[in-house]
Length: 294
Image (cartoon, rainbow, N blue to C red; front, side, top):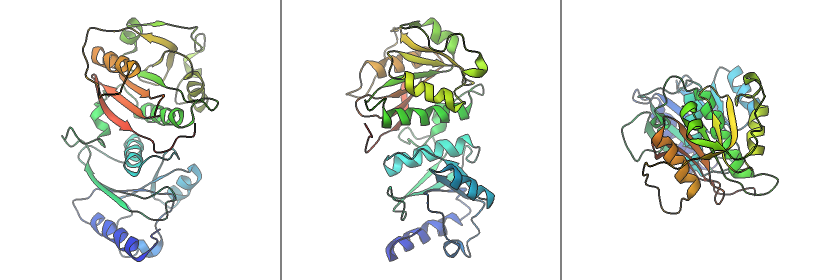
């Protein structure tokens, strides 16, 4: 995996730190697995979690009894890739509250690792953006549903629709309250479908979400992944929210809805493709792209 002499030394430092008792997991964000020589003499196999962009590669690693998760293959910054890898690892049950994680990541070609991040899952630090559990999701939420929708949002941000950039809002959870505080803008494309046929865990439904993201309005999705509606207008509320400069009506609507309900909202910026997750009126996760395909 390492390229030059300095890169090999950097990797050795990361692997050596992983052997320490204080470290619970090594999250390696790369499509280039470690070589036997790099692992020799280091009993870290049980701590190692690969985050790769290829399902076949993940299956190969799992066949060799490694932990592996799949992340989208988009050109995000190194820290953004680590954030997404943390989401995927938590969804797979590989990271727990209180775990100390070392994450190694490199440039897009994955020749070597040049970035190392240490984080504690659940650390009480308002500046820590790797804290996916900051979402504070109740037990009725499915982590697999949230992870899948984050990946879908990243795809929308990167690819748009038919070559055009699009933005959207996906509101998940507390669906009764959300439906009461929104109204239908267009004919609901999911109306009349059985619940089994409109769950966002189904790849076909995630593709439909990507397509319908070009429509005006928000998606409303139940905690278990069932898509209730697309094209919903989120009604303004009396709850005041504070947003960073530059964020407009879409983000304001998402923030307000999560301040008024127990839902979370995932937004995709049409301008930049940035994916943000809101809970209780605040941004709790932000994923910025370097390069967009649209």
